[in-house]
Image 1 (cartoon, protein in one colour):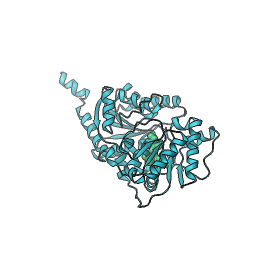
Image 2 (cartoon, rainbow, N blue to C red):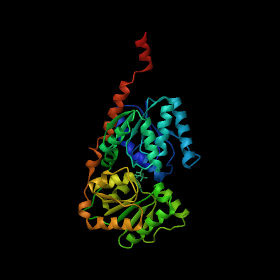
Image 3 (tube, helix red, strand yellow):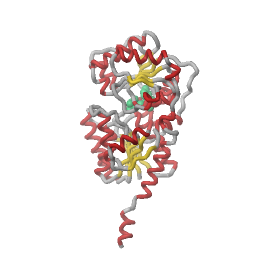
Image 4 (cartoon, rainbow, N blue to C red):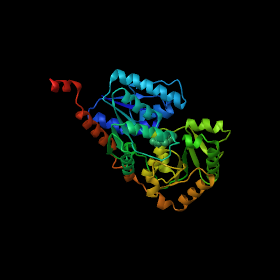
Length: 361
Ligand code: UDP
């Protein structure tokens, strides 16, 4: 039995193709929701879009980083002790992923990390710690790109590294948006601790967005974390920006496809924009996803107002050179199948205790 652990909306998007491919092979898989994202707009609607029923749902009392980590490890530990899955799968770089890796290994289950090997080379980022921990403990490491494979090779991880491509491409192909001939406006998403928890950085980014919203329509489906941080910092959303609640996945992909430009600190949004040929200004100082920058379909701008505006200006001036659909960055759209195939092979290679006993007698 495989347990697939899901904590946040991008984990649903990127794990869905793996679960679908496991189902196709008739491999039993149970879905665990850790409750890290918990409301309809951030989690329920994504589970519904991808048709994923949750078999085991944890309920978290605490929402701080340490409290939620402890509750997820302990909730998953209790589940894995009871059900003894052969293999636990988790995707990405959240608290859920680190907790799933630790709980799996402590309960005697193997752990497989989907989207292994991404590195921003910045240990201050909580996401980087989660990835390093998950990769160090993983038995199976599903690397989305060659760069990720190189990172894991350099770190001499113990588990088996398999280059699969990124399931983000499979997921997008399952719900392809219409790409209009004419694109207009700017789509914004921001949620990372490194951006929105620092009032000075947040003020700089808001100032840049304020400027651009006076020249072009700007739509910002705001992450709940960002709503809270803007209020805590005593800041306000610029008046000309159309601010809305998080959008459902299909609608959001449509917005990426119809926008002239995306401004974001999100990993998944950056990948989806690159696939759909919408240039991205990444509002961060470093990235674990260098492929869009190297490919020339996005710019890493940092968080200063002037630098963000310069990056926007450059992309709008040279739009045709940046606006190139680049699905090849993420494989061939069969990452889910490759992961399921590696899981099947791995499960078949495990000798059951009963078989071991038979061999010994
Ligand atoms: N997303 C969405 N609606 C929104 C914002 C994002 O469907 O209003 C999707 C987006 O298409 C992508 C995922 O959420 O698949 C990215 O999640 P997020 O930015 O929260 O996390 P990250 O990818 O940075 O880990």
